Image 1 (cartoon, rainbow, N blue to C red):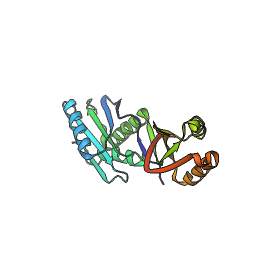
Image 2: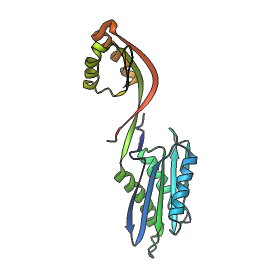
Image 3: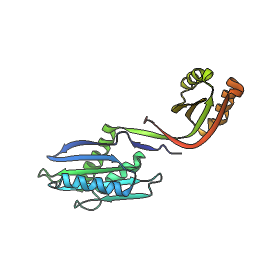
Image 4: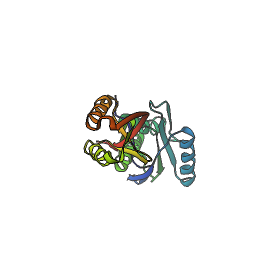
Length: 211
């Protein structure tokens, strides 16, 4: 399975100047097309005096929604290069708007492609990406006497603890890779015998720094 990347922050900006034209990339995580359109409208309003507000966005686990616009630049020189950067880097659920304030020097078709693609790529590099991992959320029920030992074991094994609640027992929900689940449960059963119970509560996601 190909790595699944997301923008590290919820949103951010990065800019560069190329032959006196300012290129400002605004990047944001988006979970729906409505959200992408709303953010785009806000950016367009903020930069209403700009020469161009070019955009591209991809939404969905398989990029089911893909949109782009050259916003007045020559066809194929702006929106498509940004979209290509997103697809090549495997970034999902993201909107990139590159605002251009023209500086008086024309860049030509090739120059525009490099400028828009480079600004999008520069923004992603500067803001950073995280890799989304699919995991199984497993609730572990254990008595208070063994709680600290269980927590230590989980931390030593780098199993993220998602939630801990207390009542007559301690309930810890942890994230475990699906293919590790049988060995995980067996190891804990051997360690704590009948004093531990498991309940699979479904899929969850983790985000780790992209390599």
